[in-house]
Image 1 (cartoon, rainbow, N blue to C red):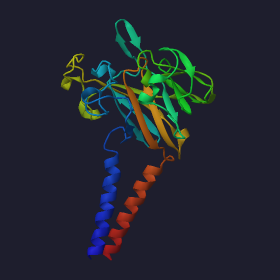
Image 2: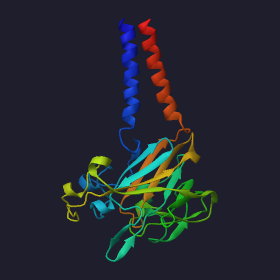
Image 3: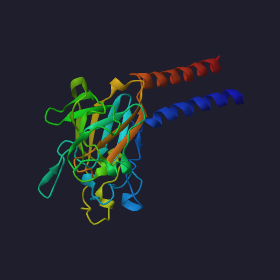
Image 4: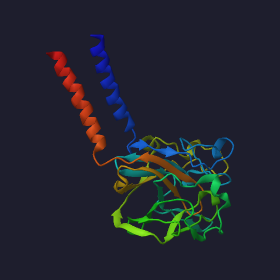
Amino acid sequence: MHHISFKISFLASALLAVSTAFASPFGTNITISDNNYTGTGWYSNREDQETEANPGTITNQSWDLEGMFLDSQTLTLVGGYDFKNGVTFNKKTYRSGDIFIDINGDAKYGQAMNGASGTGGAAVANTFGWDYVLDLNFTTMTYNIISLTAQSMVLRGTDVASSNPWTYFSGGTTVATGLAMTYTAGLTNAYTGFKGDTTNTTTWSTHTNDQHYSLAVNVGFLAGKDATFHYTMECGNDNLMGRAHVPDAGSTSLMLGLSLLGFFGLRRKLAK
């Protein structure tokens, strides 16, 4: 009897684990450190509940990149930064970057990029190790998938070298074009699970901005692969990094279905 009870408890725990993994409306949080931080406080090693940006940059909510999520093959970026419209500061609008992807584990990012060659905003060769880029077009709300080589050209951020690269420039092989992306504005603290600017006591904080935004794309072309994702805005004020295994389509639903089947099958066996 104890053995059977253990089986039921184990299956229930497995089901809970599956459901808990998707407690966020965006899926599983796959955010990793951007390796671009210093000391403690606002510039420390964190992508979490508070406003965080790169060392020496403005720390209010409008620059904050908060989390990266994966739900089956849908990759979602969440932040206080407005992915579609960018942020205007001193009469200049700092635009959204592209999403860079590494699948062989050799991407370089964070403080290691401080010595990257070229001046801010310049086009440089893709010596960073990224294998693909999702080239985002916020006019058409579509993106192209491009396979990169070491000779492909990318743009450096205008201000923070350790955030490089920020966007695609030229070269490589086009894999797909005109894919639709989803942008959502006006998300709340309660919905996203992230806190906004009202709790930020740093000098640049407005203490009023709790706005969050999300940007979602499909990364089904990476099915079955382990991938590292990188995103930043034009100035490089903040980075957003994620790492995950991209499943085959429907594999999560299949896992949940098999778990439920096993659970109810065991219940039928106990009832006999």
